[in-house]
Image (cartoon, rainbow, N blue to C red):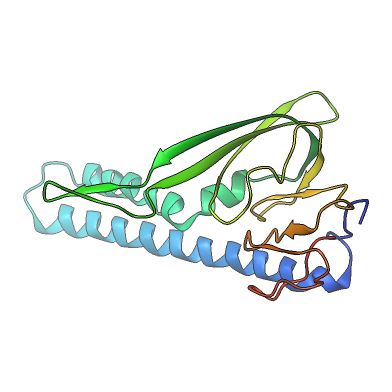
Length: 192
């Protein structure tokens, strides 16, 4: 398993590409619904209350509605780009997942690990990817690994997976045996 998969062109990866297109369409629809609802509230507010400037109410609610772009994940999908390069640095931080409610500490698995992965592209630019790892061992990616990120997928595909007994499913982030062709959890073809 040395070399990148044929994700962009191979027919066996078509279901993943279709799922990502549907995810984008769903995010657009959710964003439009939230924006429409907020503008509708602004119109109602400006016509049925004593608010001084009706256009200000509409603009204000329209701006608030832009939060729907963030809520739906559309902004992340738009800003996500394909990237290929070499990992030059990995920073690991651990945050506490505990919450305080009614003056008492509530413990939810207590810790979550976040990774900041810096990838240097062939043109010299460095791209930062932040991700949280709950299922994946923290030593799967190493400095010096050649990786490729596909727009819409969560993690990188490593070029050299020949020494890996287990690999990451780029769709659902599960850590599965490298002997598998399809992820046993999400049922999509593994990138290998």
